[in-house]
Length: 271
Image (spheres, rainbow, N blue to C red):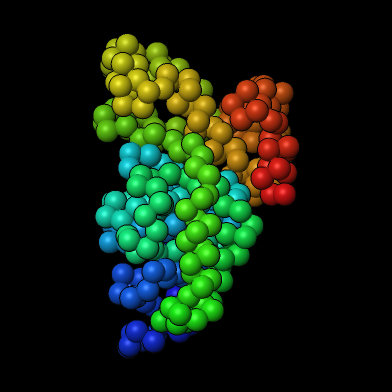
């Protein structure tokens, strides 16, 4: 992440402007904060340590483990160590990255997932960015790190990913839908556009994601909607941006998928 730590020179970094979390001999290391960007992409890379990406403002999209992760408020992406991933940032971003030693908390997930982040856990992650990089393991900061890992180990897992197939044609469809979520093309339409039998695309999608085309696209719409609604867009605006005929059709879809209308869902999550 393109953030820095003011105390990075504790690791003898010559410029003091950055630090490598992999080099920190502590169970946890963190960096983050607020930055303004018109768009930034981080190519595929991986870390020996596991990573938690918590976004409080703006858009941070992560692709890892054959999925795209666009998380709503009170959620974060968990990426185990040595898992290749890429990130895209857009807008005024406030985000925090926590790096965890592989053996620091055995109960943490072994696969990429979205974790529900409680207000306490959010504050703990932010607090670690303010601790000395080489904090005293046996002191107050060390005890805070232990509490953080305990809270992280019990954080609920949520299904908030958009599966990215390996199949080249399906991947092209996924990229196109993310670029233009309002496109209401059916699987038959995509088959004609790509000169592929719709049945072939359907079978490949089911095999790789376990989803029908409609369910797959709906998952993208839900994740996109949660992010835009959290940024202040109205239900009506989001509904039209996603290609729905009106707010009522969008709200009906949202309620069936998540059990609550959009406003209630976000209010409950923020409470």
